[in-house]
Length: 118
Image 1: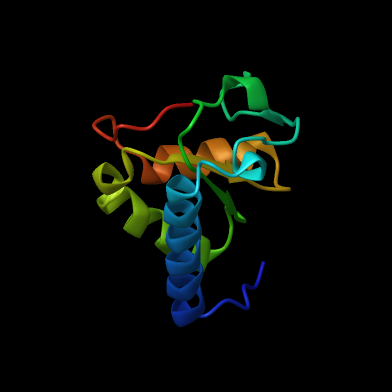
Image 2 (image 1 turned 90 degrees about the vertical axis):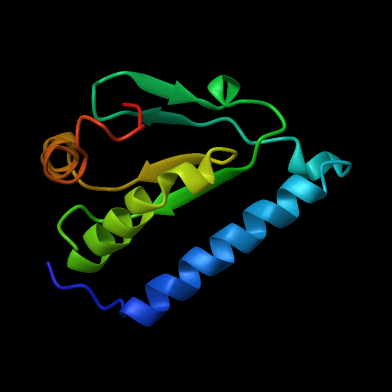
């Protein structure tokens, strides 16, 4: 699958996501930042994630990606290199791709030493 994203666009997206996450974290007194609409996501390991399982009062960064996209893979590699900088942010990857594609990418990109779950 061809990706039409540029590296600069990915960097800007990451910057926007970070700024939004930090803004949201700092504006916790607003009711709309405390409520996440209900959702149900199937994880790569077959488990499910629902909104109630997210940690309260902790920012959430949602990354929409395609496991076959080289730019998405580069973004993920760069994020994993700096993953410890995101200890106070819950990161959720979502995709329209199959669980098999996600599992294959996870095996390729995530080492046993990476502090990442499911």
